Length: 276
Length: 288
Image 1 (spheres, rainbow over the protein chains, first blue to last red):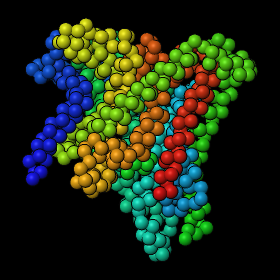
Image 2: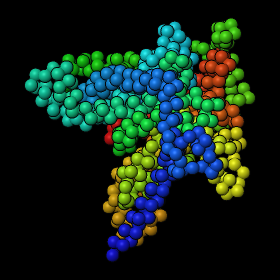
Image 3: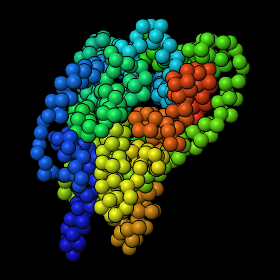
Image 4: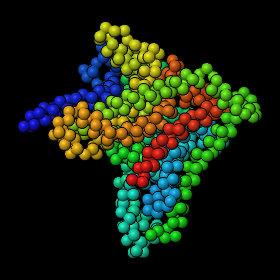
């Protein structure tokens, strides 16, 4: 009896959800569209939605500004480097918390999380001074270290959540067979944990790529990543909408795609397992 | 079960992460505390000695302090209200049977992956510009005078931009929570004749309680320190100076490290109050 009603409801639901979804996505869509317009078409009145002459000249122009590729390279190194370094440090820690828990494991985990809540601006100047005295201000290695540290608690937590789900019996069996700790981690645990490690890395790359406090404040000409490159458009170049759009599209495209793959992990990662 | 050997190995494996985070927390924190008690002007004489609680008093009695606290609260409160309310609505909508649910999810989650400097710039120029922005065209379409968003309605604008960035996060988490709701319970209520509004108010909403709390607390932590959105759009002008931005200006623009550090200590205290609540909730979950 309810067949028809449900079918009708499904149509309404679909229409409503798509309308809202497109509305939310629209600023991104508009940016992508604008990136293919000429500057004149980008500010045309009334605005042109699709009926414009598609052009790649903005991408060419942005790429020809020789520095764009360097900003991109800096972003890749900083996001990738901080992620790899973080994983190397976090895997052993998460392993020991998940498989050799002690009374203090929970406290240590919570304490790690609490360092994430330290407001960056509260410690900006000390970090700035430390960076100057270590000679790593405006260097990629400096940012790799800072971004690794601010994301380390999330990495440990996510890995811990994944490792917890690996049955301990398998490890015990390996131990019975005489596997050393090293063998256990390398040959038993790691293969089983690869999916978890992969999605942790994915989420971390996204967070590091988009991080915009430390990257803006600790870099100048040399190590500035894409966040700073885009910020340099704030004026007066921001008036070149088409080029701004092309640069923006190139800055967000890789992460948008990575993000779509890891949206499920995002929940467990960012809520530290508090919502399942 | 674990041997003494594996215990000490475990401690060793945990050590790098613990030591690094401990250093990351203690070293700058100690320095901030130290600076906050000193008159420290790097460009005008450097460290000029101990001043006690002078910086703390001056930071609070400055004419920008209370407005910046208000601005912070308005931005955090506004964004929280918008993202939680719209997030619940969206989560309920996305949980209905429909075609292309996966695609819609992808559309909705997208803004979260856009870097803050990009979303701030795109909104500032392509949407909120009073001459060429899309919103100006929309206003003209209805015969209204375009709003100069970032100067006349600066706080509203910032709240809009930041809400757009965080709505996906709220939606995704609330949707995850809704999906874990036992559908039999809802069906039973429906059979008993409970209307949709009552089913929502008495079954769905209570079930979402925990997820809502988590959304509020996690967003608060990030929202208390939003920076790029203000840096790129107004630079702290037109009443958009948050506590974070005020401290940033004291330290980097006016180069008054002592004063800025005192402000930093206030920000840390504020964040910790929020953090304690979050810890309780997350901590409880660990036992379960």
